[in-house]
Image 1: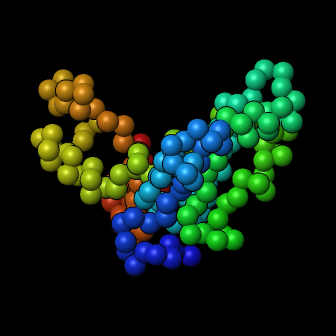
Image 2 (image 1 turned 180 degrees about the horizontal axis):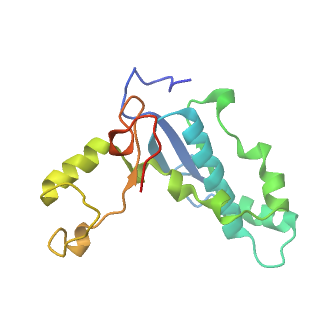
Length: 174
């Protein structure tokens, strides 16, 4: 399923709204942030789920019961929902009780790994390489970038683009 408001190949993709549960947001709808750029609904759903899971864990105090953790999250946590996803979008209400009963693993909480703002495609890496004076040979040269220019890159291939190292369908070799 593609984003209902997006045309074929639109760069915006799906959007996840982050919602402040405390009611202290200056907006009437309590939206704190909109995270854009998810390539498909599954990616947006996974991000929303991990974001809420992490938020609930940040609200869980040592020794809290499941009910206390859930109450803290309802008062101070952040919810996430995929815009325009209808019934296909992940809903926190379907899993909150389970989240409260069973603390999350670090991997279940890692929404940052799913954040599309940290993803770049191979064309962007190639453009960055051209800017820094050559292909990325895996060796950092002191002259390559200033500290304030260093960024973390998570390689991401858009549908239809070649995989890491130009080997579509093959596992990238280290």
